[in-house]
Length: 371
Image 1 (tube, rainbow, N blue to C red):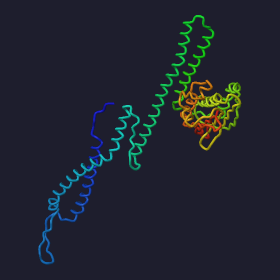
Image 2: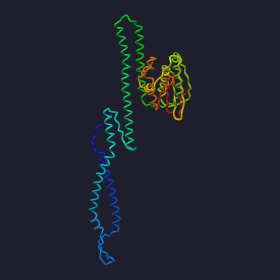
Image 3: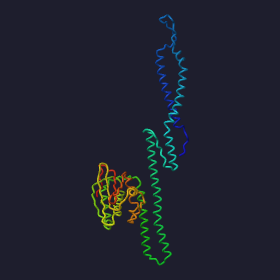
């Protein structure tokens, strides 16, 4: 926004310092003059000393005439000292704002890697600079994630379209191709593309802050997810081990249900080929509720686990089982962030993964809806 330039803050502070000094000096001189003139006669006089000499006693007018010139000079000196000293003091005090202005200008031009890194002991300016640095770091992280997301999403959306085009070109070149098989394959590719698009829409909604604050019991959500995914688990020979205690939080029931479903589905799909298991636990702590979903599966390194919540992570877990589009854990992480919670992933020594969700506990007065 264009603004007309006014007097600088440094100049205003310098004038303020000078004004305070002049007013303080004026008050001090006024008090001195008031008490001094109070005990001086208004007219001139004389007095005789003990030795017989005659001395002239000055009047108030004599004192005024004698002290006015040096007083005026002193006031002028106070104004000059106040302006000069105030100018340098204000410059020194406002120097951190110059570094903040420089960092803000670089950020506005697209450079988010610059940091203020203001030295010195803690005060209001260092607090502001540290908060600004944290904001830049968070912006840099989000922009990086969005750039990677856009690149990966473009690639993932292009893949089914390219496959569809290839199959149509082959069908056009070979009239004898089995139309039913072609339709079935096109339907499968189209279904995957639709699922990917819906997952992208859900991820975009999950990244927004949650304004809904409905009491929700994670135990009920986990139980519902287990019942919904029981046929899938049975088809893969996966057995559930549950220990569900009441764990009431506040938020969006729809998103939290999606969170529980994604974690349980992820644990089923990325499990052992046969004889696998999924453990689901819910519990309450002092100020938080906990949902834990663990599963058997392939051994994972710490480096692999650290990137599993990023979108489109088609690691060994995904390619091995041929399921999903790499957005399940990314959506879960976004839902947890939107509810001011944390999602931590840890590999198991014998293979598999444990996902632990911690969300703020609902206030005691709130009750979850009836099951």
